Each structure stands twice: as C-alpha cells, then as structure tokens.
Image (cartoon, rainbow, N blue to C red; front, side, top):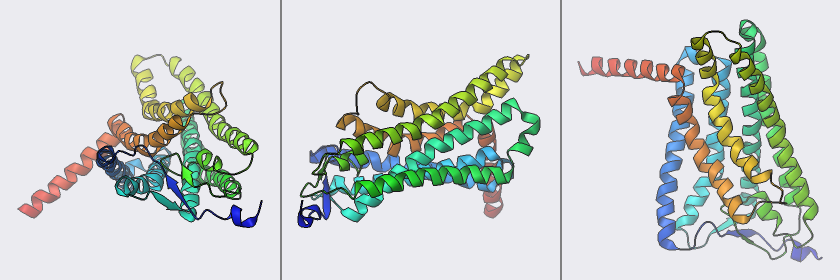
Length: 317
C-alpha cells in the first residue's frame, strides 16, 4: 500500500447520535445542563475538601482525585459533542481525534484503578482501624494515586500510538459520538483482528484486575462487619463504605455487563451508550452520591453554609 493512501485522512467525521436537527438541539440542551451540573458538582466537592480540615484524610484525598478524573473525562468528550450537535460539518482533525482517544482511554483506566485504591483504603479503615493512620500515611496515599494515574496513562499511550499507526486510507467516517478506540481501529484498510483482540484483552485486564481487588476488599470488609456484635456498630461500619460501594457498582457494573459477555465485542450502539454513560452520567452522579450518602460531607456542607450565612449577615448589618 502506498504512502499517499496511508496518509490521506487528515480529519474524521463523527456521525454522533442522530442526524435529525430537532433531536440534536434537544440533546444539546440536555447534555449541556448535565455537563454543567457535572463540572459544578465535582468542583464543589474538591473545594469543600480543600476548605474543611476534617476532610483532610486519605479517603477524601482519593475522592478529590476521583472528582478530577470525572471532570476531565467529561471534558474530553462532551464539549466536542455539544459543538457537533449544532454544527453542519461534524468534523474532528486527526490530532484532536488522537488527543481525545488518549485522554478518554487514560482517564477511564485511571478511574478503575483509583476505585480499587479507594476500596483498599476502606478495607484498612474497617478491618484494621487501630493501624489505619500508620498504614494509610501521606506517602503511601500519594504513591497509590500516582500509580493510578501512571498505569492508566501508559496503557492509553500504548494503544493510541498503535491505533494511529494503522493505515486509514480514505476512510474517515466514525460511527460514534467520539474518537473511541474500537471505532477508529475499524477505519483501517487492513486486517485489524489482532489489534481488536489486544485492545479487548488489555481492557479486560485493566478492568478485571482492579475489580477483583475491590471484590476481595469488600469480602473482607463484609466478613469483618458481620463479626461486630452491636447493630449500631455494624451500621456505622457499613455506612463508612456505602458511598464508595455505590460508585463501584455504578462504574464497574456497566463495563462488566458490556465487555464480559460470550460474544467477541459490543455493538456500535452499545459502544455509544458506554461512552455516554461514563462521559455524562457517572461523573454527574458521583458527587451527588458522596454528598447525599456521606454524613461527613453533609456536615461539612452545613458548616460551610453556616459560615457563609454568618458572613453575609455581618456584611448586611
């Protein structure tokens, strides 16, 4: 194959969710509101943790990282999608497509690893509370957070590099809402079965390894909680993990349902739904879950609002 054919494509066309103009305007408004709620909710969580010294603990350090990942993931996909809802030409340059693929793939991997790290933190808090401060010290927390970011980024860099070395020829129509890796690989004018197998194996490893660690942590946590004699003690111990457990079920549940199936790969529609789920729904719900289900976060909000109300009253007086 000649070099001219291999370098033909300089931009791609994203088909998105619908070609109907009225539907696209409706989706634009809906996803814009959801994106703004996502950014505001996660920003407020980070700000609250920063301002309240009682939340300067390992759990909330990891929650800060999770909020940053959620906002970054949403921002890597949603703004471009919003522009395309209103644009006649739904094009994305090659470099922008590569950057979008890299960041979305990296941030997805980071979130899975980070949730496993948070599960380990909850395991230590419930199963070894007397040594919690000694085990989950600042140095270890920093190293665990760095490991999450580095592992997801390296995996993404490897796949992004391999994907954009494939000859695309004149294929430029991506049947997706974003530059999702499998959608881009299918554009190559060569046999990509080995690439797809590599992508799926890597995705399952990066998904299932953290999930198994989460599962193991919660088996130990539940076993420890059941040994607690008092009902109040069991309720308090379970409440420590409730918010994280809900986020874990939300994030891992969809991915396992889609990818761990007896068929070779998800359909195009399923891939679009996965991207929407992780780009919009999960980042929007995570701060709500931690705010509504967590007594410490609710207490911090009440304290902060009380200080703000007192300051407003003094200024008004």
